[in-house]
Length: 160
Ligand code: THU
Image (tube, rainbow, N blue to C red; front, side, top):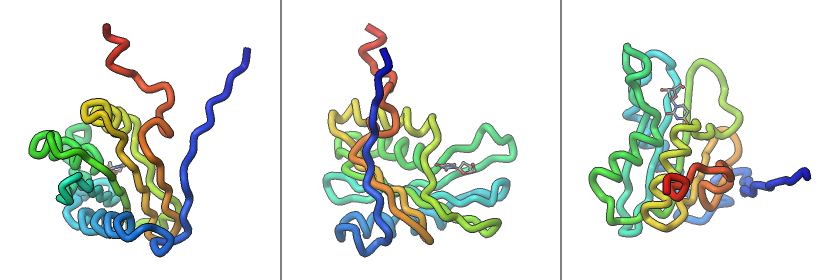
């Protein structure tokens, strides 16, 4: 029997189509990008988390001359949250990217490892994390949680 899973996301043409809170978080992700350490890929990524308290946690990709030692912007932000604000739920996460090497025309989507980490913290806080993927010269894609990216997510209950 063939079965299908559909994933849903919203596609916005510009920041002005977003709520004020979502737009501001996208702009915070641009700010986060300033601290990207990406001399090897020259691909700068910024992530900003909006917490229930209103606090913002920033992350950016941090590369290393020993390439696998670096980390993506999304996990940098999420691990900073886990280490510093674990009891202040993450409401939304915005991600953006820039490179001088070519034009980015589509939102940057998180890698598989970052998706798995988002999933972990959604489970931990028992609340979905809204994800905003902001392309500065293009669209903004929005989902209401990790389920849209990883419908066959590895859940903790599989270990029991
Ligand atoms: N990168 C991120 O930080 N987040 C993503 O969603 C995609 C990729 C980083 C990893 C590396 O520093 C650079 O972008 C190129 O892959």
